[in-house]
Image (cartoon, rainbow, N blue to C red; front, side, top):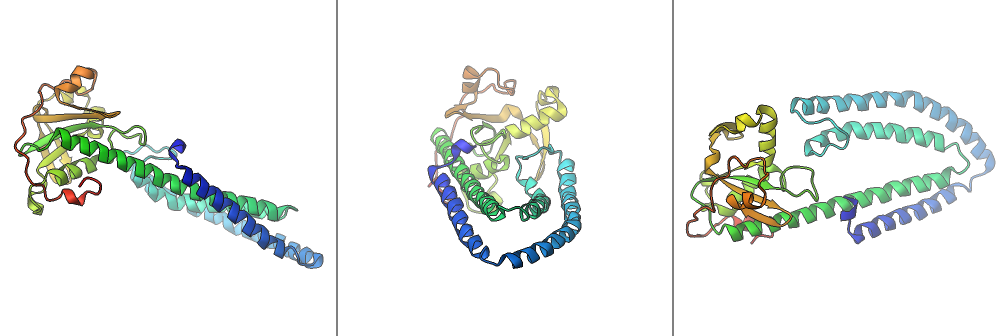
Length: 306
């Protein structure tokens, strides 16, 4: 992931860190002009204050753990793997607990550092490092999402080239992966694939006519294979539950789309080059017959694909 950072992100983070360091250095130098007597008195008061704060701040560590528990229970209920750095947007609910726990350890670090002779120097370095790191990773996140957006647009442009139109009703199984950015099985969130497909090929802007096409993703395939095993997947028809309710899918009617490392394949083209795909027992058709292309009014809603 770090290799995806733009040079501008590194320059901005370094500039922010250096600027913060020198500003703090000037600020702390002004504070050091106090008399040594005042400093001795304030040190005694500070030690007493720190001891009291350390005793009371322990409760915040407990509070941070309490804030972590409900999201962890929800993730466990949703059968999400509980691992550090969980690659899932739902794990953002854990940030409240993480923030409180990190605050506790930062306070602990501060109370130990404030009693050292080089406290101002170390405080300047520490705060500059935090600011610089924060700026870098915030910009790195933007860089990664921008490159992912470019790759997604590239995929859909290839898709529209291969499919100027689509049959009146169709279900597509999409094996479209982007392992350069995500450890997930699909190019982006699995549910976005169906949304984009219907936006691109909707013949009417009427909401009731929007969902003409369904997508069965590799994420769903792997999940079904884990739950039911490959014997269940060999069934001619199977049922799945979506936000629209229960629906029955027939793999014999699927249009299979494979995209990885800029290789775009459809139906039997997949087996000709990748005979080991896990869904090979379903692929038995050539390229589908397509109707005449028409006007698609919702394409303008997708930025970069006009």
